[in-house]
Length: 113
Image (cartoon, rainbow, N blue to C red):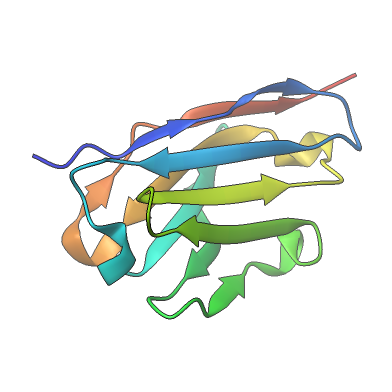
């Protein structure tokens, strides 16, 4: 059974950076569109970024220019590089292979001074 596992969350000061990772060694993520989502407390989950099979990327307007999604097909890992973090980026971040219904359990990112 596929279990996507996110890592790399934590607490960072405003303006700082974090890199999130997601994968399952047994899941060939290279064959699927992969995405990162986030859920801010009290709000619905929202799409942050998406990467296609051939590397095409899409970003939510609120992270454009600050976040970068990428994938390492040899390691079966999807990354979310987050820079210039803001307090409003505080959320639980999830990765997903939505077409397969696979979701990770999330990793908490807190941006606070």
